[in-house]
Structure formats: C-alpha cells, structure tokens
Length: 214
Image (cartoon, rainbow, N blue to C red; front, side):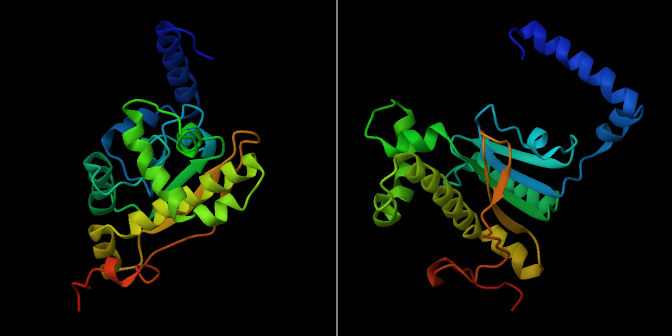
C-alpha cells in the first residue's frame, strides 16, 4: 500500500509499464475518446474503487462518488455528471453502489455531531425516518446497520429515477437502467439488491413527468 506521494508516482510508472506489456497501444486508444457503458454512483470510501472491484479497465466506467453514495436533487455536481453520462456518453446502465460498513450511514444512525458534515448526513437521516418502524424492529445493531445501508441505496435509486432528464431518456427508449448494488468489505463481493429500474412507473404520480413524445 502506498505510504507517500512518491510511492504514488512510482506506482503510476509501474502501472504504465505493466499495462504496456499487455497492450502496447492501450494509451493511444484510451486517449482518443471514452465510450463507457456504465455510470457508477458510489461512496467516496477509499476501499471501494469502482474499476478495481469490478475488474474493469479504465474507460469502461464513468464515476461519481460522494459520502454514502447519495443522489441529492440540489447537488449540481452529481446532476452534471449524470446529465453528461446519459445525454452525451449515452451510458446504458447507472449503478448506485453502497457498501456495508459505510461510515456516513453509521454516523447518520447516531445522534453525535460531526460539524459541517451534519448537513450532508441529514439526507441519510431522512431515509432512516422513512423506514424507521422497519429498522427499529431489527434489534441486532449490526444487522440494522446493514439493512440501513441497503435501504439507503434503494432510496437513492428512486431519487435518480425522479430526475427529469432521466425520465426524458426513458421517453425515447429503453435505457438507462438503474441498478442497486451493495459491496461487502468483508469478502469483496457485490450484492445486487434486485431493484432495476428503467421507467418511472414505480414512482408516485407526483414525480412522473409527462412524456414529451406523446
């Protein structure tokens, strides 16, 4: 594991050398354009890098990360990334990936203060409030924590489905599909929660924008 800035630079040189051994033209091809089929909305946690845990090559996954993989409708950074991904890159799949043991979700479960971070954690606390009865029935704290992580992912998937330009893409065709995944730090495996969405049909009526093609 890298310990210093110099280690990172040396690691980059090693990575380039090893990459070129397998594909001498790799960087020439990579530098011309990108055409990823996937957008990854994940947690900023350093232990959950999108390409490494999926064994994907650079250029295959467009990535947006923040604390606890939230989709906040006033987050212009995230919305800009999503807009570019679906409108310009034409990604076919959007993956919202949380992870068990998420520090942001854990913090939101408590009543502790975390300074400026408290403002961001309110969005996660809103998820707990919505599912409070079901979560409070889980007496084992670790299991309740795991379930909260899962519910947070499912809520962010729904938040993404509410975005107007996502629905605009659905008006025009099948894509993008939105997937709900959770990664386990304990065994390195990804769990598909099975909530795959490519229409606004599962949303409450107030969130459904009119189809512009009708």
